[in-house]
Figure (spheres, rainbow, N blue to C red):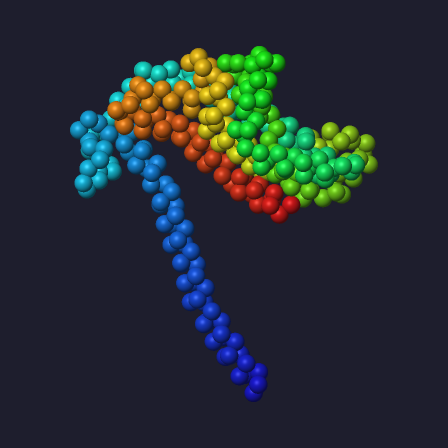
Length: 292
């Protein structure tokens, strides 16, 4: 009799928990959906504004989102007045150059900090982390003097590539990913006579590919949107990146909100495409880095 009574009691408790769990999930889905709409809406507005013709009002009551007279003239006008193709090429060279080199050097720096034993290893790592709290503006003057007076990289693409060869955040993420790799794999490689470099390249890197994708995406977004340092170093239009070159929109398109919107869309679209292509690897790599 006690067993028979306990079973209905268990079923009733389970059925009572289900609606509460469902309500909590529904609440968070609604909250996150509202946050997503608020975050995405400004870009949607700019996107549709970039296609508006002269007969479509930008500001009206009630507001008009979708253009009634869509046109590509805004993009063509920006492309004709500015060397946007050159800006794109420079941005691609700088962004992919920094992305590849930063991922490579950060991985090389993180491997000994995670998997090799030597005196002062943790101290070096925490000193690296301490530099992350220093605002980049404080180091801009000595960095500018070094680039101009010592390395003679003023107004050259190298000046916006070399300062970002190994980021602290990239080293941190890669170190956390390397710490999650079992030591047995490394010991097996050492027993087979493989060098540390061979172990890093053939054994460890294939295991942490999602983290490599995470570092690559973060570096790509950061460098594609980088404006402060390139604006200091690049002054001729032949060497300007897209972010620096499109500042000319403030002068050439001061009263042309449609042209400015077209320039903004041309800047943001590559980031969306790149992130969409590597979204799954980004989430997996970031999760693995946090667990490590």
